[in-house]
Image (cartoon, rainbow, N blue to C red; front, side, top):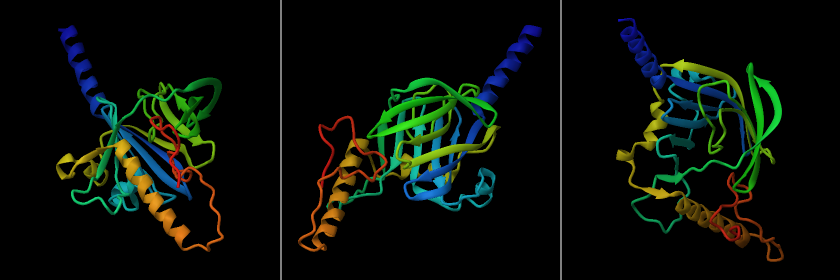
Length: 258
């Protein structure tokens, strides 16, 4: 009888654990936007990463305000089962006619992290420093093994723990965990999840196609600038994506240029 009760309680705890969520709130910098907030929420099966254009907001206040200030484009859904990450498509060349793609998907591999011996305390957790290069940028990430998740923001996958702090070498993207909610029973925010409802999505394109679209739009915009500039203006042929978060890609033989 005792064994039966123990097994029953263990089953309940496993079910509760699998259904509970963890939320990480980061102080966040992205491109020219400093002092904003980003959020990472997971249930072990899926995770969502997004940011809001507010400096002092918390997840609880976001819920109360129906996620006011959510950036509708910088949202990501990662699936633990198939290791795929989905993101919104928002740069479409004029030649693309209906149906317009709304999502792009890619299989997300682990980054080749180098875990160092450096440690520090973040939110009372012991964090380890790791470094990696990813798509044209060098990253530092501090992660902890003290939490029961392997959880990462954006695409910084592959560390054995929860990423509490991250930054690239140019300061383009930076996040520092300021608050963690454990064992939360909140639902995933529908204002985020609605973008990944395949029933409402015309079709999903491969991530590589997304980059082709973005590069084409960037070239069009740059050609407009060149056309409106004085004839004597000289332009250096640089990577068209130097101002983007992902600058180069593993399938390229050379970076895209103007």
